[in-house]
Length: 158
Image (spheres, rainbow, N blue to C red):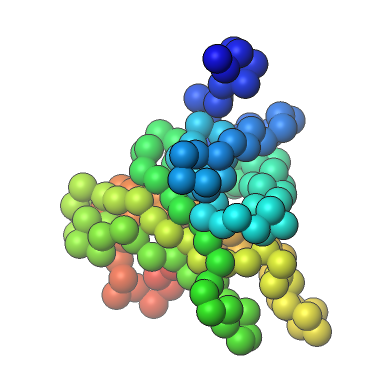
């Protein structure tokens, strides 16, 4: 029996609160209410993603993007590139390109990035890993709304 203090919250994350992390039946980690999943048995990878979400939720933009994502209620799966890319890269894939675009019903997304690769070694202009994730989350919200535009030159950036 799970006691009430161990039940997931009704949101992903809030500023000033610890990020609730659990595991689902398939072994993936779940953040907060479970809408965001981390597909990995690599605890260091999962810790990096949780750290990034903890940083993101403390910025006004980050809090808003997570709150909006919770309202849209479409799943996000975060995983590492397999095989890893060289140089390190990050990207987002809608679960259904047609559903994510053209004012369709919307869909979930998969974000591929590895927090351990950011900022890129030897590149002083490289963004931090939380900045990379914060770039991907608004695109996941567009996918969830069915308002993604893959023909846009900044697709995946905004």
